[in-house]
Image (cartoon, rainbow, N blue to C red; front, side):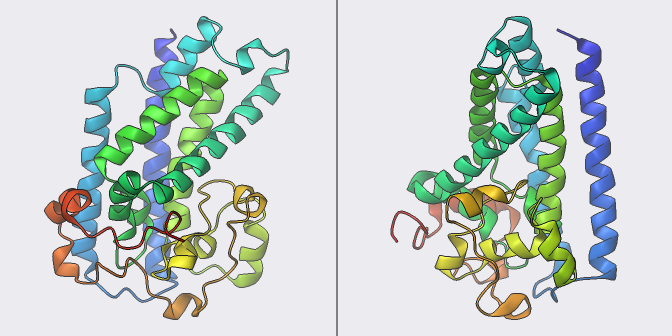
Length: 276
């Protein structure tokens, strides 16, 4: 296994994360889409504390991470793509697209299966939406997501470069499509042909169930259109739509500790898919 590649991978991912984080922080201040309704320092403390906890849970539980597993699979000829006579560049593109489909499917399942929804509702309980919402996932959900991702990489034989591209893109687009930035409608219409935009994904965080049950994509917007889960705009418009979940409206009850225990003691409400 190429340890130099793994070392570079960590540096690339961290550098990309910090660059996107800083740029979006500035743009959210200069050109916000919505006025925030709750305390930003309080939300950011909770959200970023969760971000700090998640890598720890992954490193403690998994002996190998996505790029490392992709290298191992390549060296041992594991997985579908490693058995196909395709140009390497095509394998990289296919690997990125297939992993994105896996993440879309996983997201749908987290809304469809009650036990997974209990974990995922911590993400949706945020009463405002900005780029830190895109990083706010329960540690147990992160562990489950990592297990699914590793299984997909091994089964599909995704090239290491494709995994690196996907990991960087997923992290960046998750922050981008949750960000509170104002993109002109004409530009948004063009952007959402190739990537999930903030206006597109914000609909998914609506308190209205039929809107929560839409726009599951993170990187690529095509899956929602293909599988009939696409919704262009929220019914009340982006300025007036309510963000979050109907059963969690008190910001004082969304502290860091309460968020971590939310899946176990919180009211799951009406799960969007399996009850509708």
